[in-house]
Length: 405
Ligand code: GLV
Ligand code: MN
Ligand code: MN
Ligand code: MN
Image (cartoon, rainbow, N blue to C red; front, top):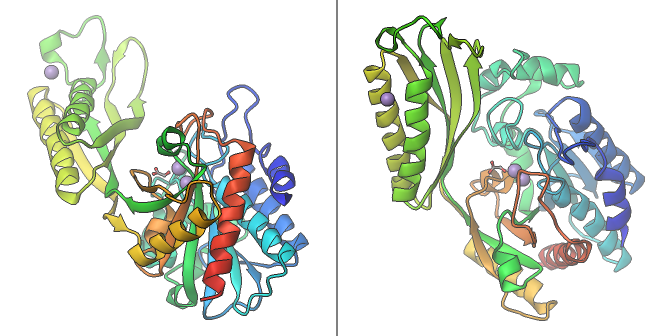
């Protein structure tokens, strides 16, 4: 199957020889190489590759226009991420095009293979930035000013990569042309492994978001400053981390504190400032709000107790996504028809996806491919070759079915 060749070319792009992980950060290094791989692979298939105004890539089979069937994912990664989160959906989409052609399918409607930019928010902090810009959910003014860890703005990075930041913005026409969008993704949990299914279908995405926390104290000598005289931002930060865990346990949710910066980060000085991110996700909006409010109160109280300044600001918030029941049931029926077990699992997830952003604008569905480790956002993320093949065949079956409707 052509997937193997595609994967053999893509998988090494940006892989760290030590950890085995990836740092495909949008508009730089390995991400640029991966996008070049996509352009080359799609062009070699006779697809017409175009970048949209937000730097997302679209490879067209047929003339772009109304009634299009689109499939794809992203190529960027979290810091030291796995090989499959994103790239599997892109390589599988190209392989599904090959499969459809091999079956002699001559689509009466255009098909697009997509690559969305900055899905992970790994460089600029806002996840699904490319799709959110196109959907009009992030303004171009805000996007242009987002900075990476070294102060480079999204606008500058985009321009350096050859895209015009002045052209950025909502793209309602492009979304209106889509009849349906399907994203194939590696599963980021163990449900398919536990139930012995190679492929599943998404049911929903939990509401989730990111909040930036800043604690501002005063740098001081580690040996001579009495404890009572300190304004140490590490203390309320520690309270916030523990509160996140306790609140998540209490509400059956997920909460993670990471991406911390400690300044100036010496060993023999009280730091003057700590900034970090809270990532929180829950099955419903009320639980998510309760988790975030609980962390906010604990952090604010501890900051007061320890004489430290404190601020917490929402950076992104994605409401609950329920994928169209008609479409997901149809996918499950198509996938089940080709599988030994026709009862294809319908899976909720706490992970965000471009499909979740598009779902508010376009009928959207997702396929998941089994991940035997259950681990994701880590070099341990995995999908067996035979399951990747099953994913490509399932995606081809689904696209063929959707083209016929
Ligand atoms: C994206 O993978 C996310 O859910 O963080
Ligand atoms: Mn991810
Ligand atoms: Mn992903
Ligand atoms: Mn304390």
